[in-house]
Image 1: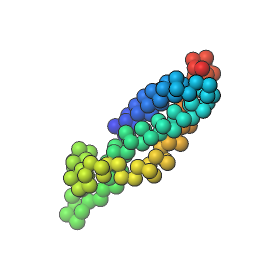
Image 2: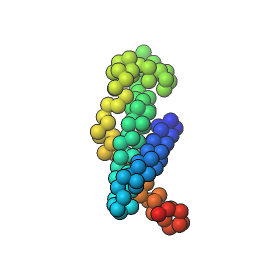
Image 3: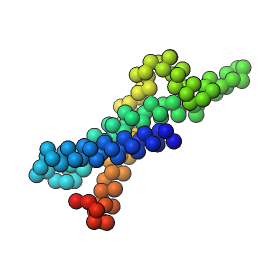
Length: 125
């Protein structure tokens, strides 16, 4: 749930902010170009914000009990603490380029579809 929240908040907030800035700085540029550019930049923010949650989620999901029958992580917080102790804080962003190529298309498609939907309803430009 934390990963999904971070992903959606980062995607929506960054998209609206970047789109607003691009609209002001790139006057004369088609709205579609601005929307695509803003959604791709939003993909970067979305990846950076949600990857730590995704990495911890994946570690918890893939954990296997040791020979003594004890799981390596007692909780999500325990997994986070042990991961930072073992890999450092930067380790939470391991795999960022690959993750971007997974998340960016999701962000672009979702945000452009939302723009089209708003346009259909007469809510957007």
